[in-house]
Amino acid sequence: MTDSPDQAAVARVWSGMYDLVLRQEDRRKEVAETLGISFFRVKALRRLLAGPMTMRELTAELSTDKPYTTLMVDDLEQRGYVTRSVSPGDRRSKIVALTPAGTAVAEEAERILARPPRSLLALDPADLAALDRIIARLRTPEEPASRS
Image (tube, rainbow, N blue to C red):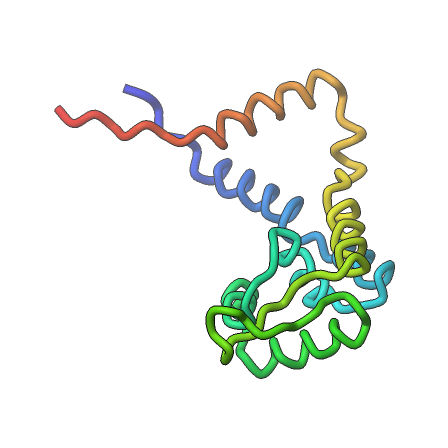
């Protein structure tokens, strides 16, 4: 029988991970300022790195509404970052694709966002190795508990 985890410690660790990774407001601000467009538009460009999408797919990926997606794509198209074309399979549907300039902007955003925070770079090698092992363990799917 294993001891149950200290719930307060679990909550602290989760909160710390959340703050470190998900609340990168400074990084988002840096991306927007460096690229000269809103972070939400950058998010759209980053989604399109995987390949062209219909307007409907892009709307779903961004969890926004159709009118806002249209406004955003209009702006990105005017900036030369995307093209919009009629879908060959459904003429009512529009396909959004990155231009070479849009790809470059999205890739620059990826580089900025992938840069580790200073606090991680400053870790002692032994602490970094321990954290690496812990993260690998956390990413491994749990095995279902056996039923007796």
